[in-house]
Length: 51
Image (cartoon, rainbow, N blue to C red):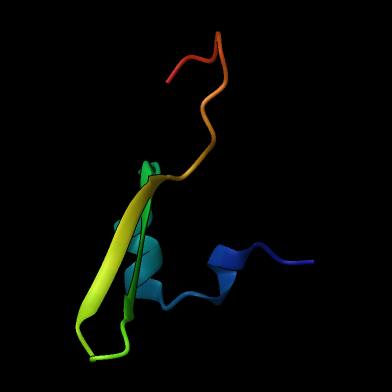
């Protein structure tokens, strides 16, 4: 099985490089078509975990 990053365009892989994903942002349109979103940490926080 290949990594999910293998499916990204080369420019996206170059940009990501050794960067770390800190948060994920989800944006959807509500019933009126207004964009609504929420940003959440990419990984759940655990006591004693170093960031």
